[in-house]
Image 1 (cartoon, rainbow, N blue to C red):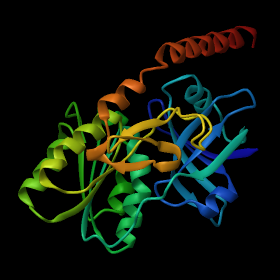
Image 2 (image 1 turned 120 degrees about the horizontal axis):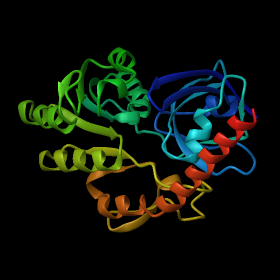
Image 3 (image 1 turned 45 degrees about the vertical axis):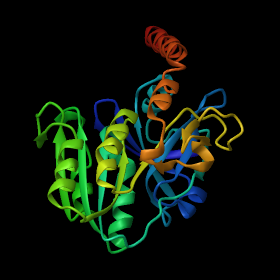
Length: 283
């Protein structure tokens, strides 16, 4: 069992959990993920490792409650335990001295971009970070990102904090106003955000790495649930990724595949909510 030793609400429906997982913590690297199962009958969901502490034997996970399993996980408290935490999985981020780099995090993607920005800066890069959310109340880890960035730009879609607009706007300005300065870009967030970040950077020829978070079951490439088309061929996010060249991802197919199980997800969520209401009545 993997005990939760710390929990914090970062924003509405976004929870941070520090979990005891010593074997994972000793091997984790930026960009990798784990597959979590809450209880024996529970489904397996992928979560990127937002931080780790090898000495304490813990990993940090940030969970956005968007479906039944993430809502169930968000309801756990300190002292509760997860049934299984498998990992670290996937290829780690390729950290090297590139020069000046940009790290773009959107929404809950701010959490997994943090360890990447930190590692890139530790490797001697100048890190320009851009983080954004729909509104101020959904923004988190601003100070954490500032601590690992040489320059930080904060955006909100509705203009309630920082710069109004999408993260692609200051990114485009950076590329236009500082030609040749940015050597590489990493972007993590909703698939549609990563799609448009990739479309923004491609005309400038700056390599752009995205981290895909698809439907996964086994995490070994056997089930095929996480299949994506990259460079015109099939890849599996769990074993070939999770990071890919953003210019080469078939974004329209990916966005379509992410919708496949929406009816089942909605049904599962409704059953979970009914179960919670029934427990409240009998309590």
